[in-house]
Image (cartoon, rainbow over all chains, first blue to last red; front, side, top):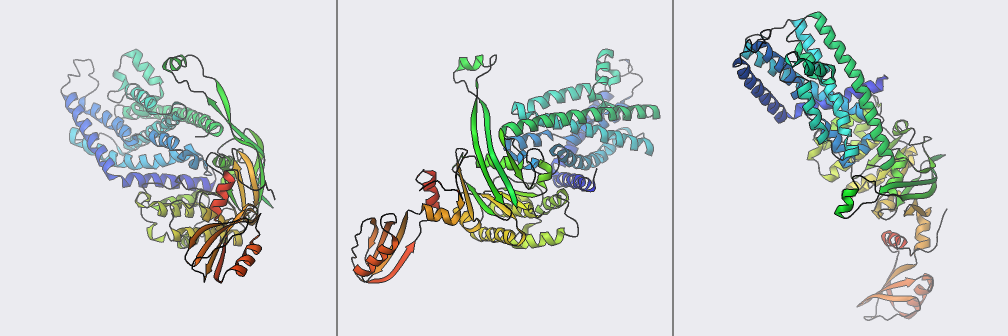
Length: 265
Length: 333
């Protein structure tokens, strides 16, 4: 990557960061909702006899810590696909395509800056919530760094999928239906609420083989198993899906742009 | 040296016919509606030399935007060839983007919720403007377009005119050699329009910047451009210097006589009285029938003249007449 491209990526990232930092109302709303969901599930898990359900290996504290990680990623990402959809609807995508920089990469860099800012704020809120609920985060500095890295990679993976979802508007006119279906898959197959390890075996196997597991379950699972071999498996799985997802995002963006180049927006 | 070459450019859009009735719409779920080609550009050719300032005009739906999109690389032509700054736009869009500046008056390239300065800093990074050059260039452009006072305000808080001025600063920041402007003065006040026109003229004069402008504001065309390309229904209608456009298409001129006679009377073949007021007569002269010299001589001989004014009809009227197909003759340079 040449220095100009790198400088441009940083500039887009900074723009995203500033956009997130300037939207205090949205940030505060996300933090409050994040705490509310953690609070609800904390109460729910405490009222659930896990041992009677055959889930003795999991305790309430670890389940809340797991949820804190998966919800942390889900709340940090928000709904960026809507920006691509709006650009297509308004025709603004034409002015973006006129720039000497790939549209998708520019979007991804902007969203990454935005999500980085939200990850930090929501991360701090998550630590406070887990400390309040369980009395301890239960992580060494090294494993906390690993959770941070896996969380960031999971968020990046989610962002990568928002690009083709947004570009679906090129064919369908709207992206929302695609997003809502995709999001349900993310919540279920990604293990948003519960670890995939307690899913029925067949469903768990399917979920683990899907990219959604690398987005939420993989970083969350580090709260259940902090061993280095497991961490290495998580990171390898995430990197693999990042490569596959990046390839898919580029392919869909190119197809959409070919359509714009032939038909206009 | 040629900045823009367009050779036999054509573009058709494939449009699927709509089925009106409910039953027909239901069947369209399983059968495909017939497709037809709608031509937007037909065999368009022209060249623009480096440093020229050219107005590219035509009525709504003439194909101006389609041409501009092809020339900037965001639309593929159906056939023909074009080169802009030595690049084939639809094959080398990103390389071309480094050499051209674009302002779409109705579309923004600034970030709506962020201060203007943040968008301009991004432009500096995008176009590789060095940290040593950027502050001076921004300072100069901010001065020219009078935007220094609101560089730190969010774009969302700017008026349309203020935003357009910032858009223009963003488009000029990388000192492009070719400027493509689509309705750039839309929403600008008189002072900002004058600043824009002066600056574009200065850019062309001092730096040899080529300007291709589409505008419905004839003031922009008159004060910026030296040549006019008129297209209609995707075809080249006229391509000639602005002066020649005036000369060839000014069939009527206006002569205003201020007289000592309270009720002046003047008759001559080819001359009609447009308005008659005490001590004042406004005449519409068909110059093909009555040359202006003969009208002036007759007026001086028959009336006691205090003052005499000869006016061209506004360019707006000339262009409107061309659009209506009332032009004199097809003219090419």
